[in-house]
Image (cartoon, rainbow, N blue to C red; front, side, top):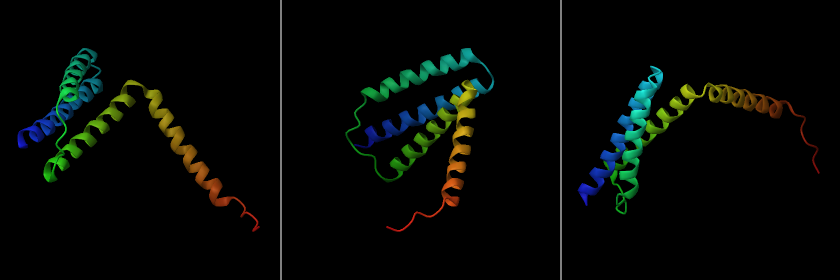
Length: 114
C-alpha cells in the first residue's frame, strides 16, 4: 500500500536529516547537541525497526530510499572521522598500503610456466 511506502521513505528521510544534525554538531564540537541528535536518531531507528517493511518499494520510492541511505552512510563515515581522528589515519594508511601492494604486484617477476 502507498501509505506504508511513504512512511518508510519518510523515516529514512528523517534519519538522513538527523544525521545532518549530528554531523553539524560534531563539526561545531557541540557534544550536547550531538547527544540530543543521537537520541532522536535512536528513537527513529526504533520506529523503523518495528515498522512493517513487507511491501517492497517501487521505482521513485526506491530511488529516494537509496539516496537517503547513501547520505546517512556518508554522514556516518564523516562523523566517525571527526569523533575519532585515528580512523582517518587508518584510512590513509590502508590506502597507502593498497597503492604499495599494487606497485609490488605490477613489478613482481612473472611466474615461470609449468
